[in-house]
Structures are given as C-alpha cells and as structure tokens.
Amino acid sequence: MSNFTKNGDEQYIDLIKNIIDHGYNENGRNGNVKALFGATMRFDLTNNRIPLMTTKKLAWKTCLKELLWFISGSTDNKILKQNNVKIWNGNASRDFLDSRGLHNLEEDDLGPIYGHQWRFFNAEYKNCNTDYNGKGIDQLKNIIDSLNDPNHRNSRRLLLSAWNPQQLDEMALPPCHVLMQFNVFDNDKLSVALYQRSGDMGLGVPFNIASYAFLTHLIAHHCNLKPVEFIHFLGNIHIYSDHLEALQMQKNRTPYNSPNLIIKNKYENINEYKFEDFEIINYTHHPEIKMIMRK
Image (cartoon, rainbow, N blue to C red; front, side):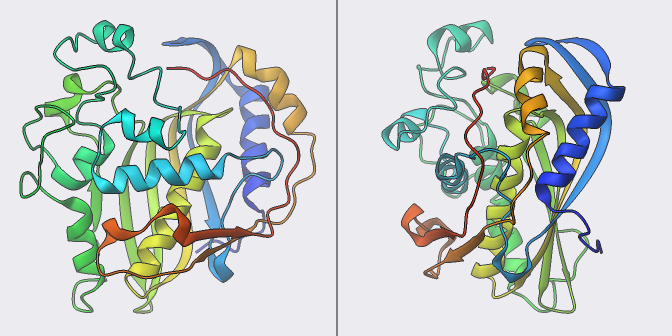
C-alpha cells in the first residue's frame, strides 16, 4: 500500500509535467494531443479525505450528480439536464448520435453506456425509457452483496466492467473508464482500483478521480467498511493542444490539503442515496480554469 507521500494534486501535476516534457505528438479523435501510455496514481481516502483538485475549482456537484445517475442505471440525458448537468449534451445531440449511426435513438438517449452496464450488463437495449429491472446482470448489486458477506468480501474476483464489446456500437460513446476492482483487507478496509483506457488530462481525469473516490467512499459507507485508497491506472493519457496554456498555469499553483466528505445518511438500497446526503467540507481551492470540452 502507498505511503501517500504526495497528495492528489501533486501526483496529477507530476503527470502533466511528464506528458509536456516527454509526451509524443498524436492526432487524436478530437484534435492534436501530446500523449503518454501507462500511468498510476494513488489517493488516500482515510479520515474522510476526498481528492478534489485544489489547484483549480472542480465542479464536484456535477460529478456527484453524474455518479448517482450511473448508479441508478439510467442512460437518459434528460435527467441530467433537469439537474443542471450538461456534460453529456454534446454526445446526446441529434447530430452526434447520427454520426455514430444511432438513428434509432431519440435525442438525449445515450444507449447502453455506463449505468446500463453497471446495473443491467448485456441486457438487450431498446431505449432509455425501457424498464430493465430483472434483465441482464446487476454487477453493482453483486459487488455490494459480496462486500456485505464476510465469507466473500476478500475475494479477488470483485470486478465491475463497463466495457461490453457486444454493445459498444450501440453506445453514444464507448466507455473511457472501463474496469473497477474492489479489494478488502484486514476484514473491513476497502480499496478500489480503476482502469481507464483513455484520459483527457485537462478536463476528464480530475473529474474521474473525484467520481471514483466518491464511489469508493459510498460503497464503503453502504457496506460498513473503511475507505482506504483509490488507485487509478491509466492507459493513453493526453493533453489537447488548446489545453496546454491552461495546464501550464495550473502546474505552477501550490496545492492545498484535500477536503473531506461526509455522507449523512445510510439506506438499505444503494439507489436511495441522494445528492443532499453528501457534504464536502474544508474545500480550499484556486480559481476555476476554463478549457474546451470535447465530445
């Protein structure tokens, strides 16, 4: 286990510097990038720490709302819009869906993306309004059931995958963060590892760090475990050319200590948690940095 000699911002900034100094040029799907392949970061979640970026303001409320939407199994962008979450709007537009050949989907229907695979893995997808209860495999429930069982929580098989080759072509966007593994040690300590195949270092990765740290805390809370560590394995990490100036500014900022997360209620069903059940305290951060978001 890591000794956490560097906090979340410091590890992130080290990666930014490494990509700028040693990355190769690549013409990616959404423009020119500097990229590297293969990286790891480890984040301390003890004492209720939550690794929200402090070298810029992170939109953690948007991040948490999206996570709860994933957990619900929804793939309907209209629900996010109703909660003032706009991050999927580009991928849910009529033009983008048509560019993917998804003429059968209505606008704002994202296809069988993360939430569908987490809760109804490989269930035949019709549309975002269909009731999929009892169909496919509820991977998240299976993980929770295993973590709640002292005879199974130490298993090395507690994996959850969003990558379903059979349904990739039905998705508005194939998943970037694809595989989680849950690991319990000393009977009640939980760490979670994520493999992410592709990471936009300017905008996406800070958001992904926060999202899966939130998830680790929530699962630990729900299953009477103690959150210890979130480990982030990344495949292709890249910086878009028009993000370089902003990241040069960010990497020269001095990080603050990570804030803390309080989960105020506990429920029988993981679907019952609401945004209002979460509180962030001691979040000191530098000002927001604007960057262009890709589809």
